[in-house]
Length: 306
Image (cartoon, rainbow, N blue to C red; front, side, top):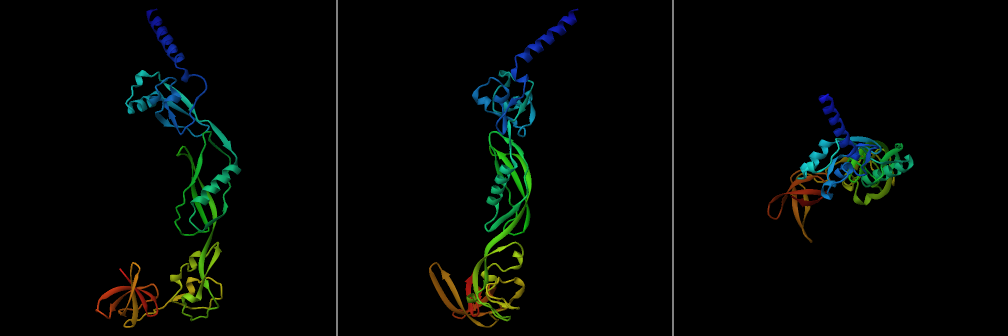
């Protein structure tokens, strides 16, 4: 009989503790932020302890259980005394959510992708998104472009969905891209065998959906090259039709320029090797017989480089 009375007393004591801890009963408590705070699960606590983060919040609209030990660890880490708080053994926490339409989500993802693309890259098409539950507290979308400046027509871009700066969901989206850029084009009809000069090119803005890797996109890739086939006026220069040819031969004299701030100095030099436009070659100055490096700028022309 005495043992039964003792057990009954323990049950009544446990029930009293349960009733005295409101966070344990009823519907899950709500955590609106990216993290569950002490104040979300403990009804009465000092402000400095209530603001402490315990664990990350569940996904929007979902529930997770926060244990007493989780709260105690957070309080102790901040130098507080968890024994002074009435912490429930465990609490279910829900993160309030709202459902965003696929149209609204599509707009936000497209905007994030466009902001992440390198200059000149244009978004032609993007994979279709579906509805999603997001935090009621608000969210943002971030696209993670890792393709550098190399253009590809098709790409897959990672997407992060964040609330209060913390990621709560990730995805990947397929995109179709185009490249809008200025390229050197033929200023007039150029016959095969022409050595391209600066006057032979004209810059033109073009839209490319493919073949960007086959085009010469800079002046240095074109000037001083020999055309192996004809290029009509207004057409871009394809790399396959341009042949690197030396415009400076070993032993030839060339005019060598040096730039010191706003001062430009010219001197005569002798080449110690063949070089096409843009090549780095050794030359010897005729005035003081000094060996220096020069960048070939054109036939008989060079620029001193380190």
